[in-house]
View 1 (cartoon, rainbow, N blue to C red):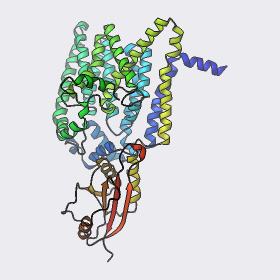
View 2 (view 1 turned 30 degrees about the vertical axis):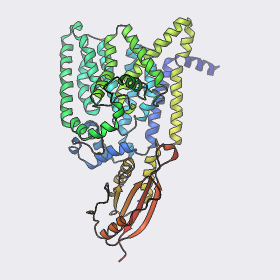
View 3 (view 1 turned 90 degrees about the vertical axis):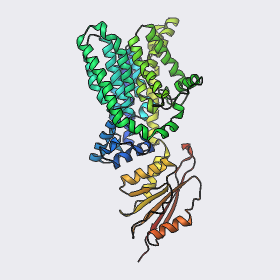
View 4 (view 1 turned 120 degrees about the vertical axis):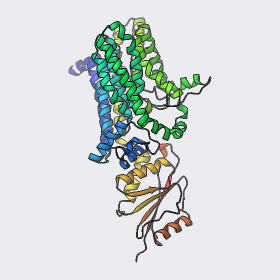
Length: 519
């Protein structure tokens, strides 16, 4: 009897489902964090910059095709310098930002259209694959989400309370922080400025008008300073790489843009909560449009500008080939808040229309929590999957095991040389593992005849290839044997660095250990 009463209460209690969704999202993030997934190539690329540079050096364009806010770089540099290079240290800041987003989602989202919209939007933020996947990565993606949530939350409060200057004052304080921690936060700030502008004069609040003016000046000034000192150099240094890498994320200038827009909005940018390039996005995108229609129909124009504005500004940046749009959820985390808000509003609107047509109020009471329950079950399944397979792709785990096994007994003065750095993500993974193990290494795109090793120094020669066997040529071996004093080959190891389910072609790595001759 008690069980039946408890289940009946759970069907009706929105508080139960809210706490369950937030708990599931938090546990999912903590599980991934404590499982210590191996560092993947994008994290390793950023980590190598932080390891090899000082604070001032991080102001210069980054290596390995990386673009990252200076605030994230400096905080990460302090963490690594103070506490080491363990993955728990690297991912601590993203974890805190991810959990903070789950906690703040509810008080912010319920301001859009009440309790039901807030519940659905909070569950989408807490229990989605993308927000969890990038909520514990050593990248600033979770900060993009958190900063967007803070800006939109304060702007919504300012819209609802046009006589109150304090929300705008808090936006003044948040803007510099958001700028240095999240590049795409400028799109959200631009939308917030546009949304609040029409609310100034009807309010007749001089303090609010002054606070808004100060906020606008600080926003423009902070962006100008950060762009000239950091962003411009990073973008110029990585321009050709980014143009090729994100070529599908920049809209074509012609009639093909209409098909491109459809494809961009049914991509994994909209695939919440389950992820994937298609599928669930075919449902979420129409719900977002329905949410837009609901705001327009309700004459809530300021909120409409606030939530649609980030899409428009991000698209304009993509039109100018400055920022990708619609290609990958990781670079669109600043759009998670408007996507989940509008999708939740659209879902509640659709449910209300169905209830009115069927005239069955009890059906709405019993089924309103079903989507939240589905998301909680999905989170539980993914937590179990992560526990059984504690890696996202096999490559980082294989690279970690390779370095741990092959170089376990190397002396502290052993030189590691990678002659061929392709495929690059494997060489970066190996480089990161060597760096955190305090091994000296050098990457060369081809054999450099000017390279010499000190007399009596052992050398590990690493070589990547897509086929097997991959013997290192006699000339290369002769060159290195002569450079280290007619050394001898002590070990010749070949490993396959791929797993069949990874989707990557086979990659083989040969490691040849050349040691000085015994006197």
